[in-house]
Image 1 (cartoon, rainbow, N blue to C red):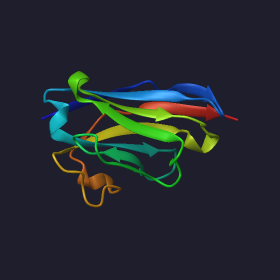
Image 2 (image 1 turned 45 degrees about the vertical axis):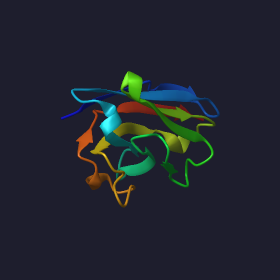
Image 3 (image 1 turned 135 degrees about the vertical axis):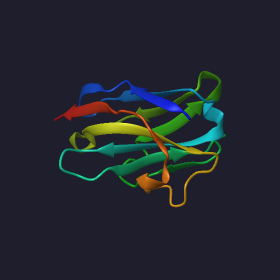
Length: 126
C-alpha cells in the first residue's frame, strides 16, 4: 500500500505560479500511475492531470491544458504539478491519487484511483 502526502499549496495572486509535490511512501512510486484532482467548495472533485508510471504519457483537463504540467521523479518517489498563469477559478483543494501500474480508463474518473493524499489548499486571489 502506498501513502501519499501533498505539499506546496498556498496563496498566490492571479497570474502567478505554484508547484505542488506529492511524495509517496510505503511502496515505490514507479509502480503507479498518478493523477491530480481538485475540489472547490460546493463542487465535485474534478480531474486535473494524470501521468503514466514511466512518465511517457500525460493527460490534462481542458481547463488547465497549456498552463499546468504534471511530471514525476521516480527516483525521488515524487510527482509534481507545475501550475502557471493561475486564475481565481483554480482555487481548490488539490489531491494526488495513485493507481497500481496502469492509468485508469477513464483517467478522469476519481473512483478509478485506489490511493489518495489528504490534499493541499491552493488559493488564487484576483
